[in-house]
Amino acid sequence: MPRRNPLWLRLPGSSSPSSSSTTEELRLAALSPYSPNDDISSIPDSLEHSPAKTSDDGSEISRANFSSPSSPSRSPSKKVSWSLFDQVSLSGEEFLLPRRFEAIELNAGTSTRSTSISCSATDLLESDHVTIRKISLQDPATARREYRNIILCRLLPHPNILPISEAYEVDSTLYTVSEQMDGRLSDIVEERLTHFVVAKISHQILAAVAMMHQNGIAHGDLTLSTIYVNTDAELRLSSYGKSDDSSEHLDERYRDDLLSIGAIVSRFLMNEEEMFKFSKSRNLKDIDWRVVLEGSSDSGLLDFNARSLLFQLLEGRQSARDLLRHPYFKSFRAPQHQTVERKHTVVGQKTSDEVLDKLREELQRFNPFNMSEIML
Image (cartoon, rainbow, N blue to C red; front, top):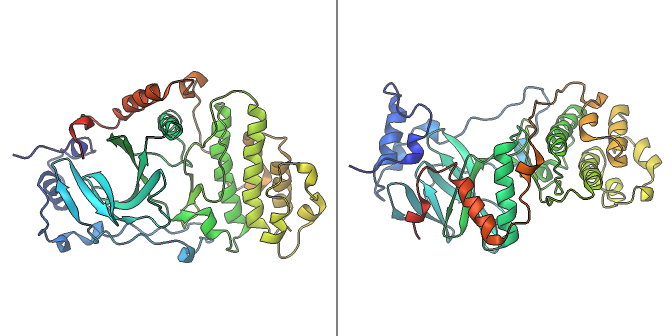
């Protein structure tokens, strides 16, 4: 009898005798070896497409600028089949994936020369799209950053920071599984968004950053390309940032985070030429505030609350937590979040080997089996 998949055993309701016929078919598929001659056309339609996202505010973001995920019916070539994992080749790039996930294709813009490569996949249990990242741990700085991100995902989860649902390591390569988003802020920056949508986006960024600042953590990497967004304007930061653990100059780094958020917000409120004049500046004295705050019919800065928020973000005198109570956000309420002692969120001055050991200990929280038994 084939070995049962430990990932499947950990799934809610997997052992229930009253599971639906579709769930039973998936369970049998997960336990049986893969055959290249299997008929993939028998997969239910419900597994081929994730539910469409709709807006509840009447101001949804257009799907035109997002790359729609490919249909899960595309099946890449599988070179090796185990009871637990499949080795999948996507455009010449090898991925080792749990059998719960069906790979689709490499994500657009992925370069095989980078330390991080991602692909889109389908979660066969949840019938939803996910993103699977493959990260080389050969670089000590990369290993330290990924360990820090996984630690913070567990200790300080937040609805506006992308969570990691699965993680494992094989042959000095880290794999992480997370929700697949529709696009990045950079994909919609040219759209004419209403103030309601801009406020919703800004509020979510500030809510995530306020939680980090309250826990003594600076982000240090807030850009249009590092923030994901769905078509209903639900937003996730891609990670907990790249800032180090040092407690020195924290106030200055907090202000840098707020200045970065101000540059993002201004890009949605102003045209590119006006925004370019000050978005790259780190010296607030170089900014002509009268030009910025007076606005024009083209820049979208005629809303008083929008001008006030932008001024306070770029000025950097108020905290992210205080800015969440700004009148521009009167329609939104920040989610509750927790705080932990700083000693639990600091990687510290560990050697590269110590970081890798700690990372592997953390990965055991995701996987109840020994990954060293699986070698490429």
